[in-house]
Length: 141
Image (cartoon, rainbow, N blue to C red; front, side, top):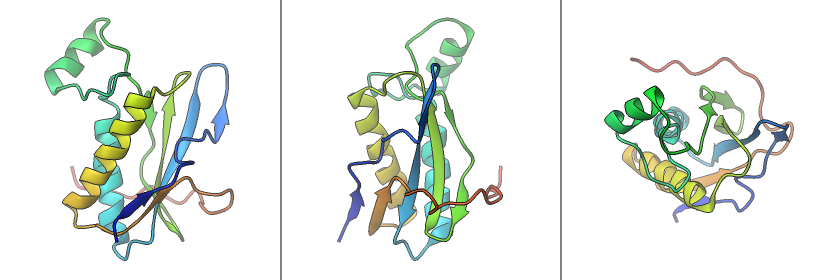
């Protein structure tokens, strides 16, 4: 078995004139804290992702932050929270999230899950009511 990715993963949970947001939930893992750590690490990488799906290095990201550079795909990532179904995060982006950025986000999350030893499960968009606004998971430095 492998980690499956639901087709609905990037369906917006809300939209307004400025942004859209989607939630990612890791289901079926017996290692919830490891899955939470993988989501945390993936979220840190998502915010340095250009619209064409390229991860910016720390130096490139700093340069972008100080001037105008490539448009970043993801504007913000929430802290990881736990639900009864598994850990989840919310990602926000402006307008449409380009396919290259979506594909790279999935790859990043699969890499981070593998890094913590998770090779089975499902990455999905949670159904309304599946998640709660629990306290964020705390990770060391």
